[in-house]
Image 1 (cartoon, helix red, strand yellow):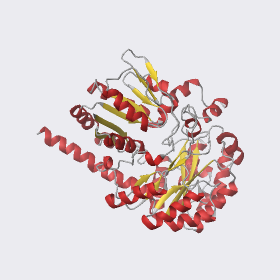
Image 2 (tube, rainbow, N blue to C red):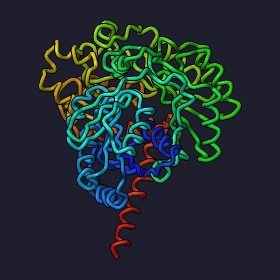
Image 3 (tube, rainbow, N blue to C red):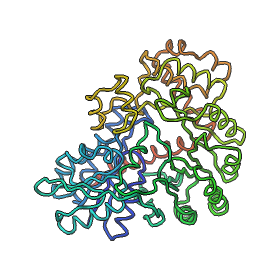
Image 4 (tube, one colour):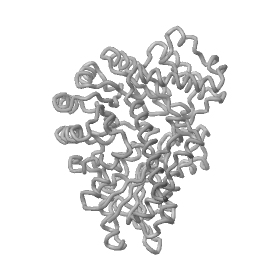
Length: 502
């Protein structure tokens, strides 16, 4: 069978896993990548350049030539509408091809996704077993029988729903990530992305985890770790083959199991020994953990603050942790020379100017190396939607937009020319760590209001460059290399197309 994976912008570990499964079972696999050059958060969007580097014609030409039996999309809410665009066109080019959608957005609102005429299958929850069975189902001529973790439409448009299995418990038995599929597109020598675990024990209201864990009909453990041997084998094998220089562990909370962490880092030091970035939680972070991470090569650590007001954080976000733990974490990271990334959500429902000013004053005394402000993004079925409904920030019409991936609020929104306090504090937090101490004290909300848009844009750019070089930011280096590689990759594809025409 011939299988195509459509991918948008960045590496998708789900695609890596499913591609590995398909190849292992003897199928032909092709990746069609949409780089979104000059049309994403990294560059803020430049329409003319985005049009110049658009590769849609090449993608659809390849699709028409290849004529796959199956086209797969793994989507989050932000990319859902874009994925629908490519899926609908693909169905017109390859009318006999089956199209399958999976990912977080699909799991949240399966009834919305399956309603699209051009989508044949949707996967809900974990997709490894389902994807393998979907392939076999198509090979058998799509008989009307249920497929686990899957909804699909029969020829008469009847929707058949399969049983929702419990979460995969032995992660070592899942297929290793297929990195070969990315070799033309990603700077694999610069940066290696992986996960050592799945699941998160916390129930933050804005996160999909509290909804996702309840999907299976069978009871099963949600937070699971791969074995140390399995991860080390993956890293050493790919280190030798790809020669990458840095690693990012994409686990929700890398330090969750202290005993496991200690054993893993001991093995990592001996057999991998590369700089890495990971995600921590302030309630779990202590001196011993900081020492272990630093000793093993941790250069960067990311953690969430989201709101500095403890009462708000507990009531609206279900994050009961204390500011004392945030301060402790920042001091420990600074002491052990680990670069700190602090995530902060802008535009949360019910958040106030007073809370933001409290955060500004907090950061004056407890400055992370980098503050990462993100615009609030509502995901379907998350509890925070109910909070926004109560406050009349959302209504049923807006919730319908969210369910269809037309969310007006997103991580990539940045109305820096606006007068609302959200925009001003987004700007303040973004540039705060790059300012000398004496300027930070003078950098108030009122001052931010007076700065023209074009000056804010310049400040943001300068701050970004300065902090990236100062802290040797892993993600920045990756994004720059990704952009450069994808620009040349796109230009080469366009050149090849012209040569073929001649």
